[in-house]
Amino acid sequence: MSSDWLEVWRGDAPLIVSIPHSGSFIPEDIEKRLASPWLARKDADWWIERLYNFADDLGATTVRTAVSRTVIDVNRDPSGASLYPGMATTALCPTDTFDGERLYAEGFEPDEAEIAARRERWFIPYHAALRAEIDRLLALHGKVVLYDAHSIRSRAPRLFPGELPVFNIGTNSGQSCDQALAAAVEAACESSGLPMVTNGRFKGGWITRHYGKPERGIHAVQMELACRGYIDDPSPRITPQSWPSPYRPQKAAPMRSVLGDVLKACVEFASSAPPP
Image 1 (cartoon, one colour):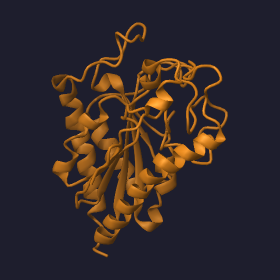
Image 2 (cartoon, one colour; image 1 turned 90 degrees about the vertical axis):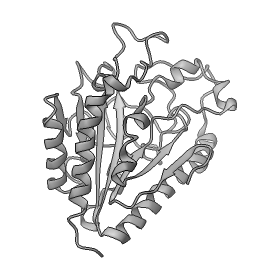
Image 3 (cartoon, rainbow, N blue to C red; image 1 turned 90 degrees about the horizontal axis):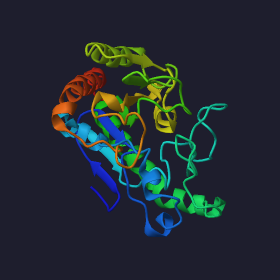
């Protein structure tokens, strides 16, 4: 099932891969008010849909929006509340980039009425699709893993100091999934020899926190990858010429292998439940 912006690929394994930030579509009426089309797409999770395009071979369901997070961020609390109080982050309808650059020309930021309209048009349908797939697979298996797939530049000084580990696993401080699943995901990442952390700077966004209900058989995990794990990070300075880096299958192949083991571990964990 798909529309011009919402893509749903249905599998029958007890695994859903959510891809909320790889989109770059911005409607013309919004784009003409932006300070820069490049800045508006700068913080996309570049090429994540290509990195994980093996997921259907595992029987996974994938849900992806092609809409840019600048239009609306479907991984933020719809009320507008911050997921990380006291820390730098971006909003439901962002007005600045990760680096603090203004997204809109002065005076053209979305007001409350426009934010509500965007929420109705894009946020609610995305989450209706996620909920429908969770319910469908829960009825089939009795247990399901919701895996929220993300990436970010290795360095974003406004958001975190230094260089981010390659694998950043978020389980809402252990609340969104069973510890056995977290351990299995960690083991798959550790086998790569690359740096990793669980519940570090990124503990999981609204998707992980909202849907993760282990007591109901819904286990949610966020994976935030540092981009250097599969593409070239911009260096020394990010510019329209250096970012986004092109997707090169040979560079991405080792990461895809590790992520294959991660998703297999998710399926194995969820398959351990007795049929409903």
